[in-house]
Image (tube, rainbow, N blue to C red; front, side):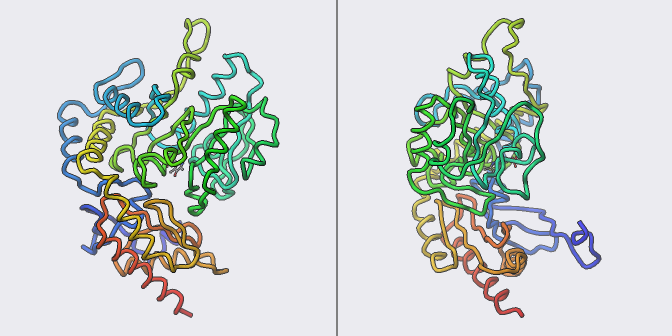
Length: 396
Ligand SMILES: *Cc1c(COP(=O)(O)O)cnc(C)c1O
């Protein structure tokens, strides 16, 4: 905050957006190069999503989801269940952000085994350099020291592995669940898993009847070129955690999808104590559900996924010669090899003058535009990034 509050620092205030463009308090325009921290799908100020939110606002903005339900949530749950492949994820549990989507999956997994015959299963396996959110529970699964929470006292253990081989060397008996960001670790700096890794992980956990939790908070809703990253390797998890792109990037809403088996593991009489005691005040908000339904409609009506391959190809072609380039669908990244760990931030700052907003991860630069980005906008984004790179490299 010292730098932020410094006399000579003028915070950038974003006051307006349209499509992939954002405008600041001075009227300068920027392309939204990281989809407003990986959330935006169809662009800002989309008429269909705006209209859906406004229409819902005319009815009611929010009602409690504790002991009540409402039509937007019912319809959204049904659409999501029909959308995810495999037919096994039939139940939806709403929260309001990615971290709590993870927390609820983890708590369901632990409680399921406790009350369904395997109480020794108190261990969660997570991957080295994983990022699953910032609440203390989600952070306890993280493998990035910067974001890692302190030790926990909830009676579960976390074991970190770096590969399926390392996982397979563990005793499976105490493992309740294994959690992973499929295909690509986001906050780790856009780190790709080897092809087939997810499939191998799925084979291991099936052999040992261990739950698989997929954190698709970043990868869900078209980001990897398919609706969900797990589709690339034909894997169906026990828990699918979705948030960022769920509402098209408009409102906080998250969902943890799970199976009939897990659902049934919580059924019982009140005195049996099998209830899942977990809920957030704004879980399944009516406005959020209305936005999510509108976003899914845009996916269908505008055939959004069908238009991605050309954009993915263009993004890759334009960035391929940059150092450390890698790509997973609409996520492209490069890394500057420099001992100066502020160089990423400097490049992002320089990119602003060329009309591009994005946020570095250390010395990794990311382009992850809204899915509605045009080929021309992709070209302008990469040109701005290259210009900023050249400027910062030329600086003493
Ligand atoms: C952003 C993110 C989260 C956390 O979501 P929040 O809504 O910020 O709490 C969890 N996992 C992944 C992979 C993410 O990218």
